[in-house]
Length: 233
Image (cartoon, rainbow, N blue to C red):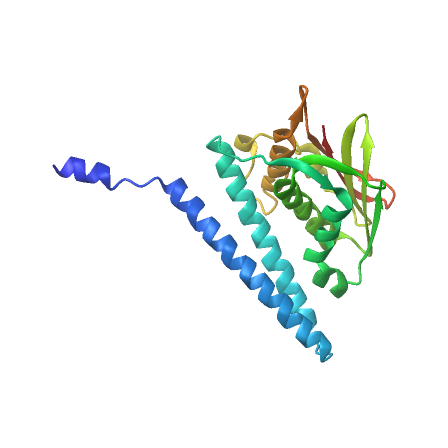
């Protein structure tokens, strides 16, 4: 009888963790919204505290992105990662990207330039791709010196989105390890590589006619910094 009771009390910890992460994500979204509202009121009064709030907003957004990545990776492991394909305009997607991060952009006086083909639209999962690009954009904001360039165009019948900054470029270790499997990641490092794994997971989840999406990291580009390229078939 006791053995049966023990077996009934066994909990799937990964499921509990996923549920907790989802709860934390919702709480962080409310916190981010409150920070934005408070920052707007402080800016109207010319308060210096608005700059500090911008930094807090940045860190809260980064944590929210990490939680979204954890949920996506958990669902992928359970073969339950939803993919909702629909047609989306790239200018709307990228404008939303700026809106999410406008506090930090203004705080650092960053110049963000878009180069998007007119009326460019493509079929993809808006939530997954938006989260992927937001993570890359947040990284670019952190390491850029003054400018970020985001381009979107069609190349070889695929959508290609690039996020380029004028920072010091990706470390050599990131360039060498951008295609590691999860089992090869070193979770003891501050740069674990989970963000890149998430980006690659979302990209390859999008496929058409035997072609899968890809990501690519390199240094150089128009701003002589880091260059992240997402390609979706």
